[in-house]
Amino acid sequence: MDNKDLDAEIHPLTNEEGKTQENCDNGRGKVVCKGQTTVSKLSQWRTAAFFASLFLCLIVVFAFSFIIPCPVRPHSVRTWSRTYDNAVTYPFLSTDDVNKDKVLDVLFMYKSGKTSNSNISCSDEGLSPPCVFMAAVSGTNGTTLWERPVTEDVLLVECGIERLGGVATSGCMIIGTQQFLTALNFHTGEALWQKKSNFGTDYSVLKPLLKIPDVDGDGIPDLMVLVSVEDKVHLFVHSGKNGHQISHNSSLDIDAPAGHLMHVTNSHAYYVLFYTETAVSGYSLKDLFSMTTNTLNEPVNLKQDRELQKRANSSTGRIAVPLSSLGKIRYLVKVPGYSYENVLVVKSDFSELVDGKSLQTLWTANTTNVLSKPTLGYFKKDVLDIVVEVGTGVNRKKVMILDSTSGSVHWELELSSRPGNPKPETLRTGDHRSTFLFWGDYQTDINSTESPVSQNLYMLHSSRPKVILELKNNTEQIAAFDAALFERSRHACYVLLNGPLASAEPGPVSVSKRKLKEDIANGKVIWLSNEEEYSEKDIKDFFLRMRYSSEIV
Image (tube, rainbow, N blue to C red):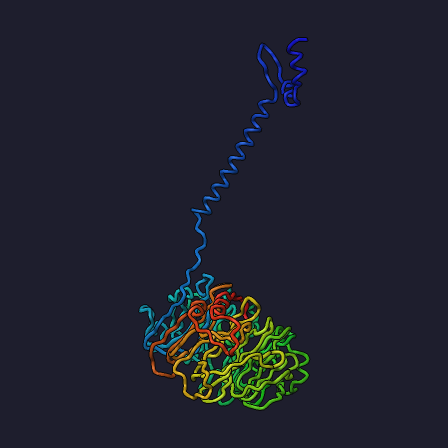
């Protein structure tokens, strides 16, 4: 057998080789393969596409790593303080993201002849010095974001009003002694609008300002101002968009109340609850609007609650709220329920929770001599509770945490107290409960009647009810105190506004922010019983590991 044939039998052609040879033509001593050029070109294109994709990916990675800068997270200093000399201040603090850096900033007011910025003066707004300045300072480092002279003296101020002036964000409303209503953009400090009021003479503005649904048809929520003139209530409705007065200047047929509260029923009907020293009564917003506009064409979005209207006086529209306890009424507080809001009526001797649907009493609790407006927080998981401070003697008080469903006492502690202690604050924690912050001076000698020179800030969490943590010692007069989560899920802080109030002689006014973790590390652990279940280090580590929620009570 020929050697070539033998080699062919031993090494048969593969499919690829066979196909290649089938497409080859041997002519003139040269082998020409048909289709080889096409396959070769396709392979080259695939290689080129691979390297092009790889090159493009490398460019994208390089751009994001080195060329395009990553978002710069603002560096928040642990604590900062700003001082204003020869000034007085007001019990007002508000936190909001003014400069849009995702960190809350601080808004407050002070009265002085000049600001820290020499380019701004009272005369810029046609005011005589001293005048009131509203200021916004950065939550990260305390630098001034803006300052603006607003009035000669303040009668009412409120921030966080949604869509004020028709802008997408919220703003601040200020009512001053010159009878001007001024709406401010809290991002810039610029006036959204300013209107002269016609409140008359010898009037006093009743707090709070009421935010009501749109009644003039411009799509922007409106504002209701209550004014007391000669023991009668005058009601003024102003457009939230431009400040234009919607209502006429007419008085309501009710005596001047000690206070009021906007109440929204489970049917989304708006009612204003007025309280005097001994009684609470309600009027539908629809009826109040009719009284002040003298028109039968009420806005369609103002409706009444069918069940409550059955109890209304047919001629006056007044709805009496029956109370089961005696005593002088001090406060009305909204307490959110499962499907609607209830109302806590705080009296000099008792507190009672009124059902927001039927306006009937749910429970009463003994809270004799309440010192400040109650605060809400979560002592148990997802169960809203009420923090009340009551006086127990000369320079003594008791902090009580009440169950909002029954009025029973979850926790209480007696402290020495300085006059003018700010009310407690709470911060929602990641375990669906709250951290409670309150002021006083814990002393084992409960018989001491001496007023403490200093006032201390204490911290409590319900998972460690037999321990409190002393955070800060303060000897200055506290005008306002607030606690907030300055950054989402982190950076829990508290803000102090110290200095003389508007009725006192001028002096240094300071606003400061302190990070809770800094004070916890240097804090003092106080055991409320002889049973020390944890070490001091365990307690501090527990509070240092605490995570906070941006959910608002």
